[in-house]
Image (cartoon, rainbow, N blue to C red):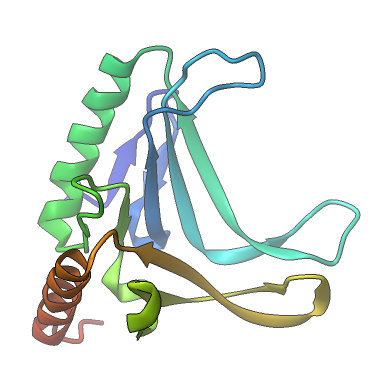
Length: 165
């Protein structure tokens, strides 16, 4: 299985340190130019400059064309599939993939059709940087069937995982 992948700008990323990946095919830069983006969120925190705020470290790749974005997304998806990561389908697309080894716990919100995945990286509380909480991902489903299907798939994959050192 591939541990390192190379981004479009030549950087190497250790997938063992990635907690989740976010796909943003419709991102626009500050000038309004369409530039798809892939964001790699890591499993450790950093402090923001001139602040006590702690956030997860990240690396992103910005693409000049949708074709180049799709090529890297395809390469990344192949590596991720080999590693057995979670790829929930929300609104008929995969916009986040999650490293199951970086999950601390999962909870659900039936009323809001939301799956909440807590990760094992501490981040600052909103507006109170002296307190820490865990980083998390919301999976906001569009209907009850999508919500139930994703819950079943996620719980099924995670219940089959074995502890590896």
